[in-house]
Image (cartoon, rainbow, N blue to C red; front, side, top):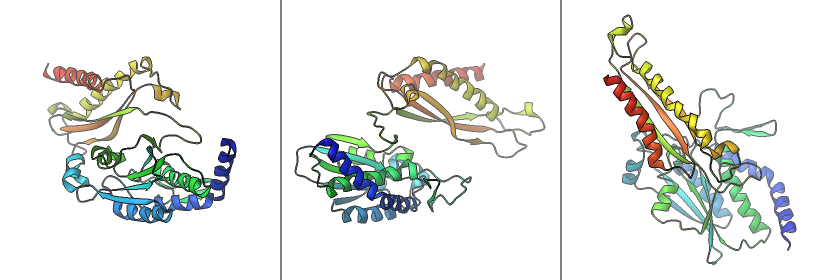
Length: 320
């Protein structure tokens, strides 16, 4: 069969299966796998396991040991067990192609107009927490395998899929656990997240997270000079860190990305922030988080040092 005819056959199958694909995505998104803390992970894996086995794939349900989880996740996630699922279509071939999807989602914010865990269709789109990031892609990967099988197409490789926890908090108890413990050892891999339509990328920027904490001295709000305002110092420090972005446009990766701006580093502050105790008390503490994305040409040690230099300069200014 020619490649053009094969593609047409697969496209027809997927169009015929469109409603089933949407229904599966709705069912996946209806399981509220918010992380942190890590709700309903086993419930999700058990539901997905039944779906995958009905396709004729073998499965392996993997629970992450509690001591491992405590090593890599924050305390608010302890008591919420981590589970992963691996599915395999073993064609007895020398090479294995792996597809990865994570199933945890960030917590739903309060400004939803609809129930985030009761997905609904409107204007040709599906609305619900996780439809994009990334249970829709997870469903797509399953139907891609279904299409190959239903159309009688030999993939030429063994096919392996993993459905993993904790991507939203670093991934150590998800894909990280599978890789560290050699529970998967593919020859090539596709991460089913990050693009749309027919877009395929062959890399991703790295990430560095930090939590910056600023200390002050409490005092009464009626006498602002009677203390040291950690919030005011924190926002000045945040401005100094943001000034690092002035150099980012000169740092452009040689690798082609599906969005041109992704060829440069990025910096985002304040994903989490807070401090203080009461409206009329000078805040004696303040913190804000930092999300720094690295291009392949950057060295993580150098990036850390770049941030430390700003922090060290601020500390010296405080002493003076």
